[in-house]
Length: 526
Ligand code: SGN
Ligand code: CA
Image 1 (cartoon, protein in one colour):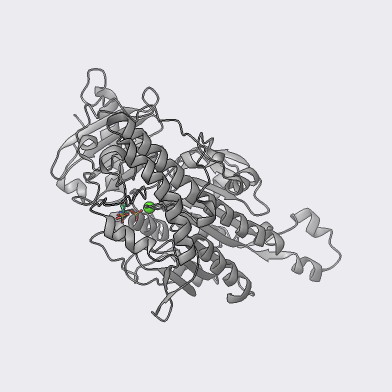
Image 2: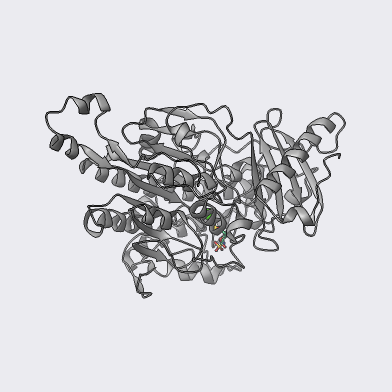
């Protein structure tokens, strides 16, 4: 076991103030155990949060978390896809070590060690509500209620703990928050500290808005990212992807342009989703999108005009779904405030990965490029943690498990690969903080056709190897080329940095024991 400090009981008053209290009894009453409320969305990228300096939307409630707490400016995932990300998060281990490498072929082995189970052993109540996406049923939770697979936005189904499927009425983002608040208020054992995972489906494709926000952001025109018309020169895997807004985004399924006589590959699935709405909602939904569709099909847009029109529709619908999410984060914060729980609760907000909002011309994620390897991470800290503002150190989603364990006063098992963020939350500047991150994406061949790859990211550079039915290396100088448009691998002058990065990549693959190293041995002399 690694060293740990018993930090589970934080005093609401500092030690000095406590010493001044009249009686022990009074001091006891002021000592509260630390709770964790972990809110994770799906596909919510930092570009779409105003606390990350977004040029796009306003998220006042998310901003409250960042304003009263900390904002990680270099927060990353280990494998930019839902199931794998969730598995990394609850095990504190990279995908090859927890066994859940992709969404399509894996079933999570729920008998393995997980952070919720270790929290239970430390006396915590644990609960999860919402998207789970690990195929097997949850283990290590005192209470769970999850949506099947990706879940539905409208009148969604839930799988209950007795393995029944029930339908609930309303919009999923609201329902998940209602259930979470209800568990905190009525469901849990109030004599114990708790860790609650609130896992939203929002902002996942196909961005179906809450009916009251149909008209939101309709007056907004979103600026095109400067590399929207990327031609992928020098980047073979980027050229082979199928996640282009222009080419791959479906007019009906994604953009709701269900015009008369129009059809598409995904129309049937679309009808299934929107068919779940109440009649009155459906009427409002159809009235809204049908008028846009009539105008759109009459214009017969092509080429750049069509690409940019699709981009604006995508941005508007995504922003509407963010709006409901932000409201609901506000509701959870208000509840904690009302109940006087903010001082002894760590509130975490993150996403299962980042997302492309038109950068490189894309939607979706998967690539080790910045927009999707990044994930937002903001935290409101409990009393006793004075750090505020930005935390620039590189952190990864495998770090959440050891962080929560340390906060709960539980030992951190040796085989956990992440590192506790507690020193950073205390405002320390650990001299030996990690200097590089490891990444490995596996889901190929599959939807969106992003080839398998692994790589290393340092403060300044990124080295990626795409493999399987391709053997292509990419190297980026993030300082000179933050949008990763210029692959400098193999260019004169990069020999030294390439050699160093190869060495670092190999060191990480050895440290984390990724078996891929046997298949593709790294020659550090390249
Ligand atoms: C679905 C989506 C994809 C998305 C994956 C993975 N297609 O399959 O666009 O990349 O989920 O997303 S859809 O037609 O079903 O909308 S993840 O976040 O769950 O990993
Ligand atoms: Ca996701």
